Amino acid sequence: MPEKKERKVWFITRPERDPKFHVEALEALKEATKNFEVVWSRNREAHKDYERTLISHELKRDSISADGSGGRTWAAMLRTFGYVYIDETGHLVLTKVGKKLLDNIKRRDNISKQILTLQIPNAYFLESGFRPKFETDFQIRPARFLIRLVNQQSLEYYVTKEEITFFALTAKRDNELNRVTEDILKFRNGTQEEKEEMRKSVASDYEHRERSDKGARDYATAHGDVAHTYMLLCEYTGLVDYVRGDALRIPSERHKEITNKLLELESRYPFNKRYLISLQRFSENYGLDVDSYKASALGSVKPATNRSKTTKKIKHLLSSYPLVQSLSVEELTSILEEEFSPREAKTYATDLKQYKFASLNEDFMESYLLEENDRTFEDKTASILKAIGFDVDLRPKPINEDIRTEIEILLHVDEETICIMDAKNYKKKFPLSAHLASHMGSEYIPNYNGYEGKKVKYFGYVTASGWSGERNLEKITQKAKLVLPDQEIKGAMFSAKAILEFLDYCIDHNIDEQQRKEMFISCFVNKGYDSISGIF
Image (tube, rainbow, N blue to C red; front, side, top):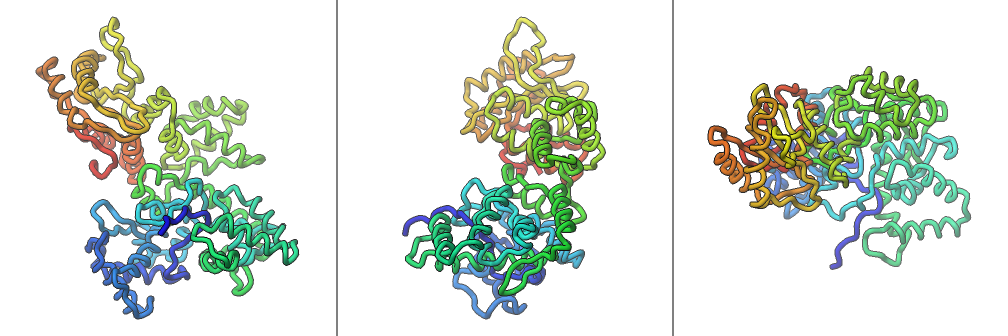
């Protein structure tokens, strides 16, 4: 059988279409896994136990699959909405929002929040077992997109199931609203023949499954149920009405109210890109409940005109800074003055500083992981280490000014010790060879020992991608011991994703700078880290 092509249209896991039954499904999962103590991954008996529990709760018809696929599908739905995720041990872990649902706290608000922040891609859709994958350029919040679509005078504040199936489901990005609106208007104004041609064209261009002679009818059958499920999800939020057999509708008098609500959602819950660093970090952040969300860095910036263009420009200017909240008004003003007048820059800087946001700057996250320039990668690595809490010297001179060998980053650990680090922007893999290990042990470390009267106690590498040669960390320790026999100097290697994940975790869990520094330095035991699972 030929491999399925990538998905070109929206999808939603839907063993249960109505979100008001999410709580019961989660309660059944807790019961079936003995309060989530049973290993879930690759445990078919656990999957079948969940099916049996669903049946006993009258949530599922009385039929148990041979391999537990029914249980996996129901669990997939709960993972899609961020109520649980799978950790590195294979256990299902409750998120904060999942726990709130089980504790009967603001259930409707919390489920609505999960619906309105549901996005493609998300952690479940990116897992290796999810097939077929979405095309890589998806970046959309489906429910929020549909509500924005309906909330337009040009569409008379309604969109039909057919229009959602053939046009809305094809949108890959949030900024395709105008394109989809124009397609729907063209469809509404077309003749029957023109409408059928449009249906066939969409079916031909967007059907990722095997083609059939049925064309548009087959496409409508396959994806119409997805449209119906998204319509139910949107209705649950209370922002639209789903008139069965008709359409999603918004009373015209609610237009302004819904518009303001959507703006509030955008400032409070921007697109979540934590999947770039870790699917677990994405799941934990997406799974925050309505009372413990982490505000975005740009939530309070509300320019009177050209809102999206201005916000985009501000986001771009701040994309080199991982923690915008650590910058002073003066620093923010100076950064923004690159593109704005002094008066505008000061206004936006003041807004940013007054806003009590507390999250990693996701624009920085993306720009760092995609950085092509080696020197800029070093600068951004240094800024992450500063955000963790260290005093950082970038490209410091060795204590002997006649020596030209320089490291990129030096961390002041305390009053007596320092850590020297190299940032390696290798996009495939950084090989810590014997030659590089010798260079670090016999040149870099001795050349910086005594810098500002402090001893080198730690060394490390931050790599853009993976690495090899982890065993050579110990050889560096041995080499340095020959030159500095009274010092025990140990190292570590971190992927760029790992240090981002570390900082993001610390911020989300309100870990202060001193503790962050101690936790980070404790990793220097001649070991490599490609995620925080080896740290916490």
